[in-house]
Length: 275
Ligand SMILES: N[C@@H](CCC(=O)NCCCC(=O)O)C(=O)O
Image 1 (cartoon, rainbow, N blue to C red):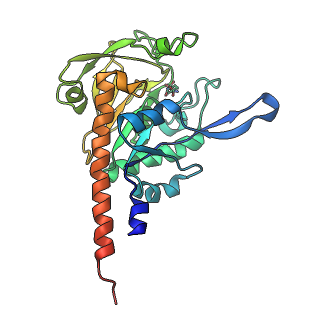
Image 2 (image 1 turned 180 degrees about the horizontal axis):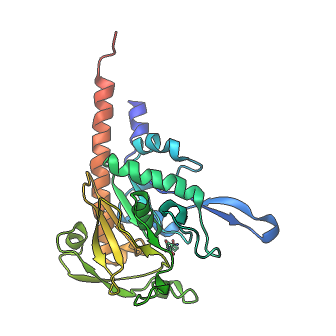
């Protein structure tokens, strides 16, 4: 009984990946494992769940670690997915990469979707889901003829960087459309240089920017909540109706999985021991 209580704390657990970054001055930079406050806060407040991290996990650890959580949020990050994962060389060596994160998150996507574990992808996380399932990315959307510059004004205050930047058109038969209360379009923020080029098999584009760029995807054969967006609903999610609805729906999916995990553990504990 004590073990059960420990294994099932009252709030669902959400795995959030670590970013690998060097921090400190030039002579004393040290490796750190990081999670952005705004992502953790959105999970805590918007989904009523507890963020957890598994620092230094590798791809082989993923199935066992997923068995102990109720969902996954793949966060945004300044770093890019290494283009070797979609058969390309790095176009701009000045941009940051995080191959240690790629190793874990690409495995997490495949196992989470196969196992019906609720999955929410945001910005880099959205791109990771597409790459993990066999899609590819534009490495510089702003360099494509006829496309918007989707990058944030880096010198502006944060409120402006995360302010609404362009419209997206929603696919009427999608979860996202329902979460938006049936609105055909919504305005979203935009803080990315890369974007989906070839959509992975099994994913469905459910939102598009005015330049045609895919802005949200759902999984065709989802056994649970599976949504990813190129924008940032985590930014003060409690102030925006669609962002709140996304995290609330994710939270409901987490509680359903948690109830199932708990029932399975009780059934296992009640089963007679084999002679
Ligand atoms: N580097 C990729 C992904 C963009 C992204 O996730 N941005 C987030 C910035 C920081 C944050 O808010 O967490 C790209 O440029 O497309």
